[in-house]
Image (cartoon, rainbow, N blue to C red; front, side, top):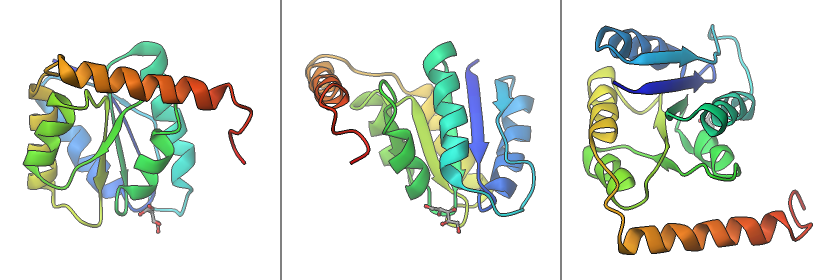
Length: 155
Ligand code: RB5
């Protein structure tokens, strides 16, 4: 069973609630970072809460906004976070096998509960293959480090 840190904006709220319930029923530990209603909020705030928790405490993040795009853009700004926006099962599988993704981004206005749940299950049940893929992730980490130290961040 996995430690799952979940967060959404208003456009992802309903899918978050439905997914959360199903994942808890399946025996996963689910930490809900909000939002807690359909009142309009800003997705970077929730991406930050989830990514900081995953960085500190491990496990996987699940982030949901309308399309999943804003959440994935934000999440990938965090060192050590590899966020994958998945709309189908193939992409969910490859995001783990090849990219060792630790945050899954979903589009609440795009996916129904059944497909979203399948995507999450494939994501959680697939392992990183390492090897040449690890070499590529090490290159991503080098780019991350270089840009963090360059004084360019935020410009
Ligand atoms: C909110 O309207 C929407 O822009 C947001 O949920 C997300 O889709 C952004 O990428």
